[in-house]
Image (cartoon, rainbow, N blue to C red; front, top):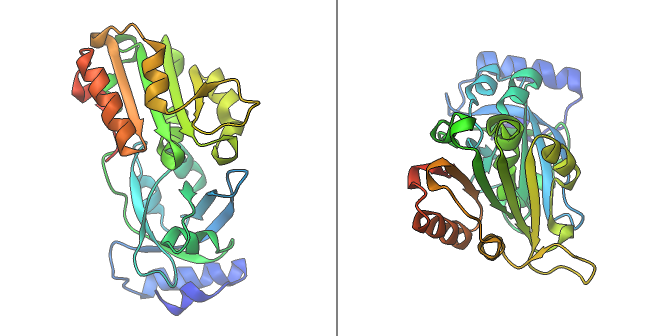
Length: 271
């Protein structure tokens, strides 16, 4: 990373420096953009998850190239040996209007994300171009043809699911949209403040805790077991699904849905 990446500059100086950099420096070169952090803050009660936001107003082409929920990019920070792959949590419309990418990341000691979570607003990071095709929502569209959509997320896998719910799934136009969201306990569960808005938009949010305390009266165990316990009566020709999270969860859910007759191309992932 360039020396600029290691500096914490006042906003006016940072703006001039980035403008000059964009005009005069060929980065490695055509695929990486430097941008300041606009937010670094805990996203869960135990600080195992963090909100991270990046100001991409100096890279407008990058902002508008994010077009589908589920897309991701690479992010580099000073001192890291390799970049981190991060799914974008905010919807594309937010990037276009606010010129900001928001992420939900899991802090793992010694990782690139750990270094990222130790930075502050105004620090400079580098972003790759947008990667992936995102969730192929067109496979479960129009909404009246696929009234039932089951969404499954575990841990930080809820990050691109937020983008999907807030832009792409059009839950209020479907009769049965359910989100099974798994975490160890409420202290490790992000976006709880958004649940009411998601419910209002037509998503039935079902938190599933694998190690809850004695006060928890909701679903216990793992996402896949909670879904199997529910014994849904599926019409496979009008059902879609979206999955993001642990490999075992995605494999079990996919096998169950396919066994029930749901077409595999109606079971969406972003990787």
